[in-house]
Amino acid sequence: MAVGAGLALSSCEDFLTITPTSSIVEEDYWKDKNDLNNAVIACYKRMVDNDLLEKYVYWGEERSDNFERSSAVGSSGPVANIMNANLLPTYYQFDWTSMYNAINYCNKVLAHGPEVVKEDESFSENDWKPIRAEVTTLRALCHFYLVRTFGEIPYVTIDYNNDSQELHLPQSTQLEVLNNIITDLESIKNEAMQDYGNTVENKGRITKKAVYALLADVYLWRASYKAGNNQPFKKVTLLSSYRGPLSEAELTARQEDYGTTAAADYQKCVEYCDQVISMVKQEKIDYINKNGLNIGGGAIELELEDLLAQNESTSGQKKSYAISTMKPYNAIFGAGNADESIFELQVEGTTYTNSLITNLYYNIKDGKVGAFTGPDVLYGGVESTPNTTNVGYVFTKTDYRRWETIIFEAPGQNSFAIGKYINRTVSQNNPNYVFLTDNSAQALTTNLIEQSKRAASNVDANWIVYRLSEVFLMKAEALSQLYSDEENLMTAFNYVREVFKRSNPVAYMPNNPSSTKENDSLKFTTFATSEAMEKLVLQERQREFVGEGKRWYDLVRFALRRGSTAEMLDILSHKYTNSKAIKAKLADIQSLYSPVYNQEIRNNNWLYQNGVWSVNETSSRTDEL
Image (cartoon, rainbow, N blue to C red):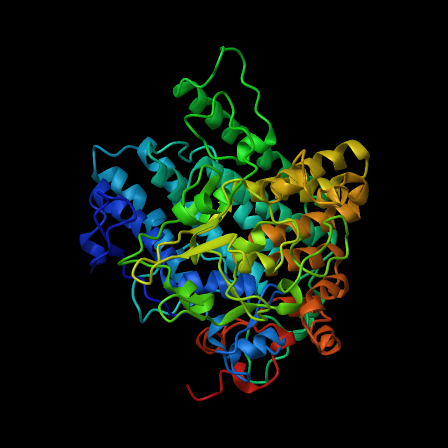
């Protein structure tokens, strides 16, 4: 893993909007708190560079059922092959250099922060603690991306100093990495900042809410790993010239002691979700009181739907549920830093842009699809009801997210460009809110929907890591695994319903014009078992997070929980015409993880390849470089 380590640093006068301009000579740096603050900003800047932004999409979406390759992408290159489950370790998508580079930025701050405490009398240990928590969390997030993608990775906690230095560290097993992430986060969770004093930093920097959300996510993943009785990689088959640290016999014999049960980890997930929900609720109450909206005084009672709604200074004690436009999309993905946001990487749009979206989702400048499009078999129609555990299409007939996720250009189109992040605003052009009850192409001919795209000169969509709707759904997923009784499953259902309800207001209108109103809204009776509730959560996560880099990880977690890919492949294969071939290639659960990039194998003799993808000499250190 030979990666550059020179910190590109900037002024911190305007957090996350001023471009790093220079590299710093290591021995001349780390003298005072300004040096340290600049280094922290550099960590965030590194995580929003395009070489990392593209990894969030490649790793979290490319192999999923959300996307297929567009006509702009060749039928024999890496994108096409990866989507057809033909993964070669030579493909650039598997280069993890940029992620370890971001980890190194964090490790530099963690290594040198104590020096600044000693050097700068105005910077105390108490000043250092929240920064340590912030950067430890960023490092944990990077490792979490890596372990979910590759399964077994080096867990790096030391910093290194120049481009020519090769860091030789062995891989840790998936469980070891998850344990390390949790240990690190648990050690700093009480030190993180709760309020930086302004919206941009509260959403764009690590807060306690972000730490808790990440902990909930990691516990959920570790619980699923344990529930399926998964064990370390076994089928590692490199050439005889390989001189790694583990023999075939040792690899085959590896077994792990889980330490805690899956149930205990699911419970921790619930607890951390509750922490986030409680904090958001208190923030809403504080806003109401601060703005004189507590009409009549007394205790303020907030419902789950209130927590997902934007604050509005004219709405009285509570924000009433809006049965109207696509306002949630416009706040979350248009304006950015919405009230429900927990952590999102900031993109100012000119010097630092989210241009990868225009390459992968939609080319704004040329008005063409990017590398990925939504499969017609999943997006070309709608489900007549959400009350099924065996869905075909992604969206149901009343779901506004179909119009927010897909760029519609003409009736009858069979190629669906992804509009998430591309559209700055989406609106329904009817002052009386005549609702779409069939979500059909007819709306295009009557001009009911307007999608306003970002300008090519200002691609400023923040990359959202966590928002409250995901916390709702993480809690529901954990509850579905912990309980089978009606009371607890109803609690899980309520969290899913509020996310669904926000984007399906017509389904909950008293005067719903649909003749099949009873089929429009979610019904608990359809999902009154643990298995059905789990599938409901998986469906709702797909509807809510298309294009946000989460779907592949959701499917892997679903498979881990079973210790088998069979059920997961039944879902994934909906978009394939050659589903038998895909199922054969992905029969081994180890195949859900990506191969290690061949250049890393060559450079580091401590690394071993994921044996499922070790198909030829491309991973051999004997190749000519």
